[in-house]
Length: 213
Image (cartoon, rainbow, N blue to C red; front, side, top):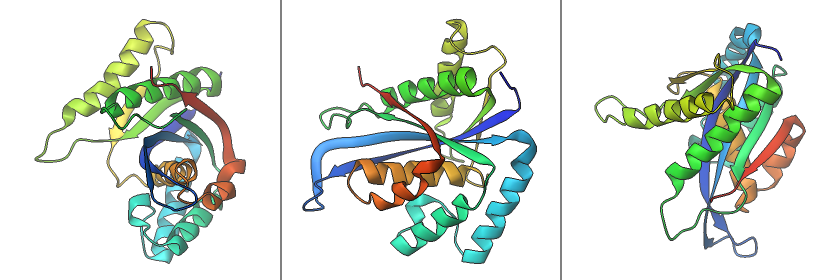
């Protein structure tokens, strides 16, 4: 197993839509965690390529801000032009129940699946997540829950002791790769736009589904 890989993980959830009408179907949200795995020695090169691309296009590649389809296509094509990453997707096998709030539960389950697979099957040594803490608003406990997931897996012997986990904010350019991946995948699952994911599917090495139970 190699030890020079780092995974940048982001998440997305979106309401399922009726493919015929385009209206929200009311069957719940799909939840996706995407991981863009990059060789640690190439991180600066990937960061530089992403900064250059966003400056050339004039907008960041945060999926929620890519409101037009033309921007989503441009961002996706720019990310696809970078060779030094592979995608792994961890997602709900079915929509979350709209009758109760299961998002935190599913985040823990999908994150655990990602940590297991990336560390034992891919050889990832370090995982980086987007922080959910905000200055003046707290939410540090949400980041701590991610560390608790890791510690539980280590105590159970399901991931290596050396696996590390950290949080960064949106200023980390590589998170944009994971953000776009999670966005186009949830668009696909929720019948919002299935063509965008088709453009990037060849870069996805593995899709792991997680059951809400």
